[in-house]
Amino acid sequence: MTSPVINSDNSVTFRIEAPKAGEVQVKGDWEANKGEGRLTKDKNGVWSYTTPVLPSEMYTYRFIIDGVAGIDPTNPFTCRDVGSIFSLFYINNGCADYYQVHEVPHGTVTTTWYHSNLLDLNRRLTVYTPPYYEKSNRSYPVFYLLHGSGGDETAWLELGRVVRILDNLIAEGKAEPMIVVMPNGNCSKEAAPGETSENLNFRPVMTNAIPGSYKNGKYEKSFPEIVNFIDSRYKTISEKNSRALAGLSMGGMHTLIISANYPDIFGYVGLFSAGVNFSQVNMQIPEYADLDAKLAAFSKTGYKLYWISVGNEDPLYPNNKELMARMDKVGLKYIFRESTRGHLWVNWREYMLQFVPMLFK
Image 1: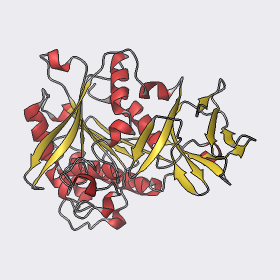
Image 2: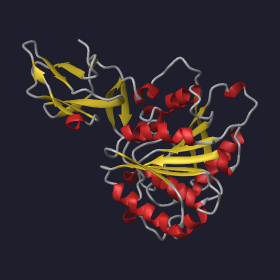
Image 3: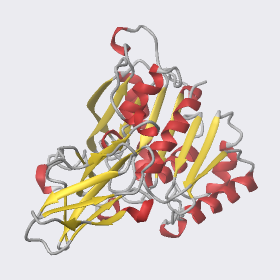
Image 4: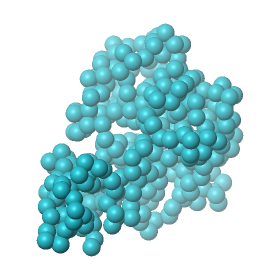
């Protein structure tokens, strides 16, 4: 038995053998029917369900059997989002083509450690270097890419498919060869769950559940240490307009504050569904204080691009609109792209496809 099966019309059929189950559902992140489907059982105890036709995308899903959620036991392909494991599949002939491996030159992914004096920790980074980096004598621009709450330095690799996106865009000539740096935004932790000195005692949770890591300004204040480390270790072009900074959700908030406090470091800035609900922030913390004045100062620095995108069903949509109104008042020019749907990796991967080709031109 195979599950899922991608049908010729791009509908998808799920199957699972559960003869003693009373109810089986599938819950995924496709838009049709809100990603929900109720499976029906045949005489052999095999449950099945076929979705409507789905557009091209990387989709994740789980089965819910008598109220208990789990992965598809016949699908070996999974990913972790915060503390949950999901099965996944692709629908081709569209954006999902960029999320898969093709016969193109490939970059290299490494994990490396740096020491933060401000945080008093050794911390792990994930770094992508473009094809032929090791043999090249040239220097490269750097894109710093930040994750959201519940993520870590592996999130953009696993859920964002960033390495495949970069390989494919570079191969098509749609993106400049660049280094991509993916730090861990949980500033009181060394690395991803299972990769710290706590080993399996640190389990993945949302960042607001990690003491010392949430909206205290420490990560933003310490960020130049990461930039300095990368410039000292890699073949970088160490100037403002050869550096980009972007992030999703919590990482969007980090991006906003880091770029505002260090206006001479980044020439390209991207906010993806940014978590800019300031009602949850102590705006007296120095890194968050005087934000309007900092944005006004940033607007005068000669940056190349300030890009904002959010889904029109995202709970953070009103907060992003409020932030843009503040930017309008202080004269900070930006490009806004409104998408559909909500706070989803479906959107953030597509934002990458739009944002990356605009960098370092």
